[in-house]
Length: 485
Ligand SMILES: Cc1ncc(COP(=O)(O)O)c(C=O)c1O
Image (cartoon, rainbow, N blue to C red; front, side, top):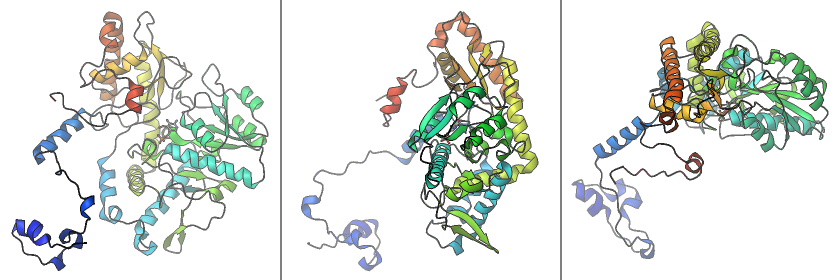
């Protein structure tokens, strides 16, 4: 390879500096690439100034909907505010500058934080241990299902291959059970929108590995017969998995273990105001009690005297489900939020989550059809417009909300409610915002009768109108072409 000293001329020389070649890395001064590999055409970079680039991205950011800018009443998936204090805590150099390969001795502060966070989660839920490995709620579910699988395999109970999920469950529940190799058995909800106990008794048997449930359920209703369900499943030798997505209305009120659950995950973004992971990168710690805790993903956090360590000696663990020890910034944010709220604050979270959802239910029930007569918990589901004479559908209402500066609620879920419109105001919104939202919903309900076309063609204020959403999700166009191009 022909060596040529190019550094002096091309880099330092052009800038008027004089460096010796020993001062800089070899790749900068030695022309060691074979000629046949070198590009023939000139390198092209778009000619943009910094200002052009800043304006481009600022414009794009302004086109975005975000919790920081708009009301975001997304039922079930829960977008609550992301406190700036949490961000500051996660940005602290002591956390943000750590390297995952650092020695345990160097990361004692971070391990202590995880240790204390686990203690708080244990206190809230009644589980005995948590693993911080899973990177989202769905990843927590999959970990939990793999733990249940291994638990029964180890007991040589090979028959237990079924996981029961209600027909109101979130799509990730059957998906996680299937991914873990279980057969999903769907149980129908009763007229009231709750699990049908008689149907559960009939379905549950020696093949049942687990019942997977979220409580309050996705209709925002509390499964009052949860003890009966736990008894039925446990009597048959099965386990109870708690999908912790709907934990916020129970904070400080009910321990998950006291409802009979053996294993669970927590969606930190829903309950403790960390950014939503969307399948990751978020935080979905998985917790367990009794025999099941031996199967938690590695590593757990241990403490001996005043030293914290990563515990890898768990022979029954399902192993790792993510790299290193979990998504640390998310854990720091959740812990900061917990410290800020304290016990009293957590109770207020639960109460306000329920109050806000019921307030909206009452404000909207004359225009939208409540899916059930019962008081709801943290979210309220409507079966579309009350006035069925118009051809305006839930989808149209969701799109029209965008024109009013509101993010659409979750639509067409849960699947058991026709024209479902699922609203979760969250505990962190003020009465003023809820009143404004109710006013907008009322205005849209009136438009649906007086000027249905206006609603059916919404949104009118966005850079793009209605999209082929399936195509947009499957074949996203990631290059932005400015309208003038
Ligand atoms: C009831 C329920 N379970 C599970 C999940 C999955 O959680 P994640 O989005 O964190 O993967 C969601 C969605 O947010 C949900 O609403």
